[in-house]
Image (tube, rainbow, N blue to C red; front, side, top):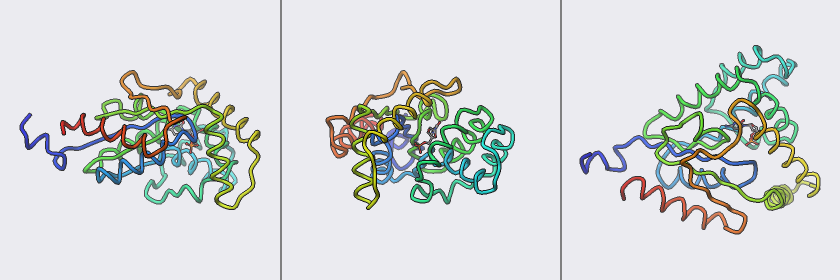
Length: 220
Ligand code: DC
């Protein structure tokens, strides 16, 4: 490889960030995308948008062929977490996410997104294991369920909402069980992922740790 090939701006870069809900992967991914000038896709939103589109059209959530059809026509450019943040949308998303035909359609769209120059940071549950197994670098961001529940709780309060910590914790544990227990593409770290446990670490420390590792992978 020549020095020019190693040049940051000339190289297509894909960064995979996986982990359970509320571990900090979204914030970390946005920071990495901003720092390296890459696109960012929160793949959880693709599952949320599919579930939401079915509900909005009054269609059932458990018809796999129908859900896959909706997933295949999804426009990835207009996904907004604020619009898709409702608790019921998250629940419905984790139900459509167990359907292999839905996953096939969304993974195809996510892979196309990853190919957009100059590259992208994708965050989700199966990016390093299924969507982009050849990513330049992979992170698995985690934290204890109690820490993640407290973060989610504080976030809701900061946005003026009302929340019950015990309920959020139960919800997180239920979601973890569904995400790690499903047969197709369960949540798990890729063998070559760097583990970032954000239980004690602030997001800034996690970002610095990730940045050092990405720089090293880029030969900088
Ligand atoms: O991260 P989130 O809460 O927005 O994700 C919503 C659901 O989508 C979650 O239960 C897991 C699922 N999901 C998935 O199966 N694969 C991904 N790459 C991203 C999310």
